[in-house]
Structures are given as C-alpha cells and as structure tokens.
Length: 181
Image (cartoon, rainbow, N blue to C red; front, side, top):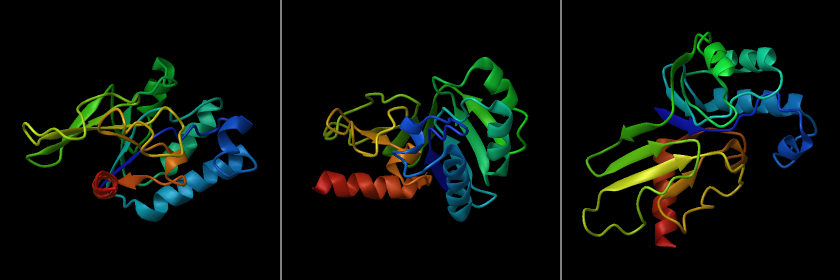
C-alpha cells in the first residue's frame, strides 16, 4: 500500500505548530504522529513524506523517524537542509530522498508529489481525461482541499489528516467526492 503525508515537524517546539494540531506540547505531538502512523502503516508499505520531517532537535527527531513503519521516501521540503538530508540517509527505513516524484497510478491518473502546492492541471481536463494530481504539503492547512479551486491539488499535511498519513486510495475517494459536490 502507498501512504502519503507531510510536515511531521518532529521536535518543532513552537506552540503555533502543535497547539492547532490539538496538543499541549511537542512531546505529545511527536508521540501521536508515530502512534497514528504505525497504527495504519505496515512494514512493507511505501510512505512518501513530502518534506519538513524534523525541526530543532535533529538527533531526537531522527529517533522518531526510525520508529516509523514502512519504506520512507522523503521529498525535500523547505526545512530539509543538506545536513538533515545526510542524517535522514542514515535511517534504516529511509529508502529514497528526492526533490519531487511522479507516481503513475493508472493509465489515466498520475500523482505529482511535491512539498509545495503546484498547479499540474485543472479539475475538468476534457481533452485527454488524463489527470496529473498534485499531492503536497507545506501550508499547514487543516483543509485538504485548500487549493482545489486552483486545480487538482490535494494537501496531505498531518494538520489536514488528524496526524495520520493518508492512503493513495483515500485521496482518490476524497477527490471523487469533492468533484461530485
């Protein structure tokens, strides 16, 4: 199974980050992200984290990443420095680090994974009926459809998914339901 998430911000001890996520402190947020992740992800699953994995305490943040199930693919975010990237590579479960990634899901659907929201196509591409859907993070929105008025853009920040990763199948269900509304 494929799971997608972003903006864990492990160890980012600023109230403006963990309070809107429903936590009284950063330790509770860190623990909940790991617990929720491991509740749904299996060891053999692929997980794409679309950036901003750790802030502040890099050493402790890496320990949280190492606790996560699945094969972790990291798409670099604006807080993922060269130093952090080198340390992410030491995690046993990190299998790939890149700037962007395209996943071909079917003949007609592909996913463009990036940290930043990116316009890849509009909602009603009637010419080819092929869809390139941008899956992104960065904005810390609690609304997975924040940018849907601009095109096929879906947010996977933990902020928008109650600190859980979201499956690629659920993303398709959500987009289909949104299009029908």
